[in-house]
Length: 285
Length: 260
Image (spheres, each protein chain N blue to C red):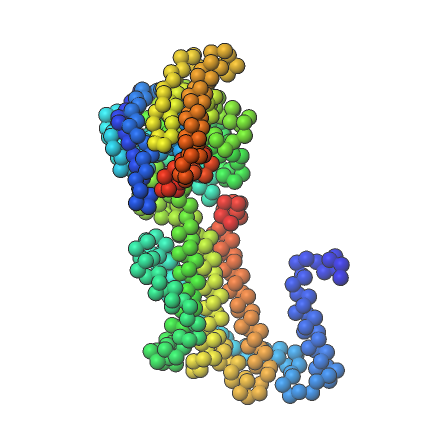
């Protein structure tokens, strides 16, 4: 497997304009992801982690700073960057293999190569035998496997995962985390996973990027120097998890402080966080 | 009545058969002597005569031909406008208000205008029933295309679909249940309007004219025959449309959860 796919994010900032108010979403993000590396991004809701992924995949534009893949500025979407969303987003009128083949619709490959690649990727995600099943016949976990195969079938340099297991039950989630780990090792590609599950982040990531909200910034990058695959019950794993969680605790203290400050004033509050928010900001949450 | 007495498939025939029996009894036992009451057998005989003389098929053929031409024009234009409205905000802003105003006008209110423009012949009738098919097709096509899940359009962007691929692989399949529903409605409305047109623009040949003639000559058998034929044709058109819809949307039956 060719080891291309160095992703370099340099002083990246992004704003939305909501009803005339400028609302910063990402503020000065700098991050380098090496080829074949697994990076987890954790943060509470509203920290812009999904926006960051959407910028990398090319679904959003209009930003300051640089997003460079192998030195090339990211403009629009490309088959060299795959993404798996929280919802599987399969086409309900297509079978498993037809859904996966969509990933190769515009790949410059002969038809038999495409068919072979689809078959291989069905095997890779462990769905042999389900080629002709329709999405509604699959469980949530299986659907997400199809979505992973669809994103990988064009052999991208980078696979982006936006809380892919967030909607699954705990058992399925743990199982798919192992599977994703196996796929990552088998394919040797760069993966960036956005999650709010700290254990998932530490289990899979070579580095865990902790983000904080309003505006979305990198709070800390925690390297995970544990050999793969990680032992979830081991002491070093637990320490790392606590280390990452401590960053959230810091954020929670800040939130409490902000809330107390807010009680004294008469600022508007966010819907669920208790943070004091400018009026326009509430729309984005 | 216990459900087992009549098999489920035949239950729909119970009421028509009871009514037929009642009608037969009213005539047979002389409960009514109105000259407007004719025996079922008489209607049947008229039917046989009309078929034998070719008059029925000539009338029906004329009506059906107008129906299909008007439906094709109305549905075709409706698909086009619906697709334009659904896929372009600009077109919607420009054309939408006019369309929504026109759609509020009762179909029958068009008749005077159409008869001035097109006379009382086939052209006016076809124009009238293409209008009848047009509105439901536009509305449903518009809603279907506007309702394509944005999540799937985003997937199409990520996978680098061209404009044509986006239409063929995402928009049309996702919108097809609504589009079919609109075309189906258009077909029914066009048939209803076919009869309406023959009543309101009385000239030429057609199944409606057959009934009007029957009424003017106090031929209740002819009128009733017309009612049966019209009902039967409507039922058949609806059945054909349902079959085509079911076949074209076979995938939907298996994935209703996502689309309804």
